[in-house]
Length: 151
Image 1 (cartoon, rainbow, N blue to C red):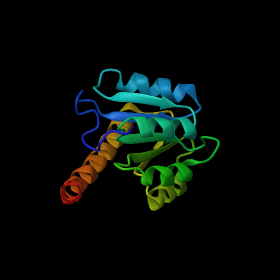
Image 2: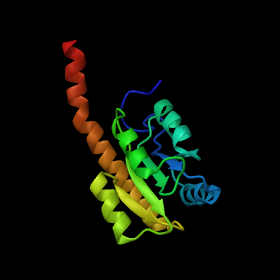
Image 3: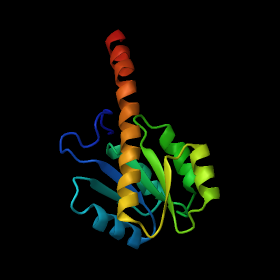
Image 4: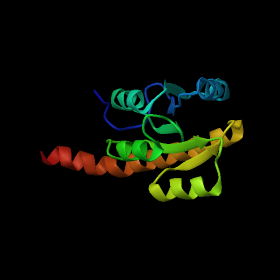
């Protein structure tokens, strides 16, 4: 059962990130980058297992390999947009060019990161994605409380 939207990892103080990639090196690289932070990293190798994790945990940011199969990143973006407290999506690719960046942002992704991951860029992008997610949660919280009180 999905947790009520709030501050991701508020009980632990951890920022929650879901890495979705069939490439084990991507997960390892992210683990290395965030090792000394208070971020909580969840890992999935495909879209189906990622969606299960999103239903089970409150996750603020999804970092998704562009070429994850079966499916693709636009499908994942559409699926997570419908979730309560939908996380921000960052697309990752070895071929992160202006075209991918424009397409991703136009469809509603938060950012695009090139691989191999750069520590500074990962922190910058994930922190800004978390801030966007957090602001969305804060804006929707009064409406949710009003709907609950009215019922």
